[in-house]
Length: 313
Image (cartoon, rainbow, N blue to C red):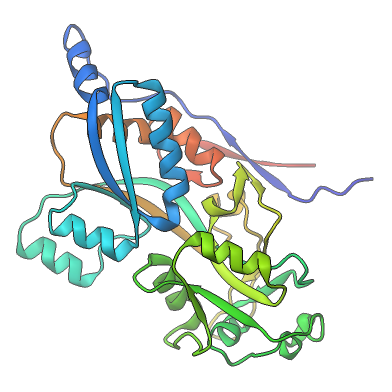
């Protein structure tokens, strides 16, 4: 009998919703929120799903135009705080220095949670490894482990070859999040290669059988829970303070939704735009039924609409 690869699927049970207006006011409000042009900046690591959101909004609203610029999270945060852009979508909240700036200048910024995303650790499909724990990842990404054969436990002698480490560029949220969670104060190894974009990361892993790197879910999702097979995400296990290794968990929507996958991140919409305009319409769309369905189909997990986790037999 054929064995089921995934034990769970995520089912969308969302109820339609958006900005609600009554009476003759509806036509006027709908007009100003679906007609016009706006620009937003987006954390490059989540740009695929945001582009899909903008494209669908413009398809439904022919008189709207959404301009998207992808940058690192630090860059979009700086542009927002400097009032160079009114709305950004990022994979982290304000850090301490940014919060101080918000407080010092009494900035009023709206925050919406858009989705749950995750960081996947990826290798070339020719690499037979299936799983790594936090200790192994720390040794690899710090440069301590230089050859795949030097892994221990279940991974000892599974694969041989000089490890080639690729990391996200500085100023990207996932560069810092991965470092904080995996390296725990240790720096990335001196031979790590920084990738300027997620596209470069994918190309490096696809083209090098000894490569390892990390990337967000939306960049390796073909549709919903179907992943790009040109790279291979590994199962990951946390290690507690006593050295006990937890359960190895694969990169999958259901495990992101139930919190069992360890490298989950949250996506936020931050805006200084309080007008009734096309930006309002776009944000409303992304948070409502159709926009959250795009989130689901992009491999991420909706947060404003309900989903169910179904176990497969």
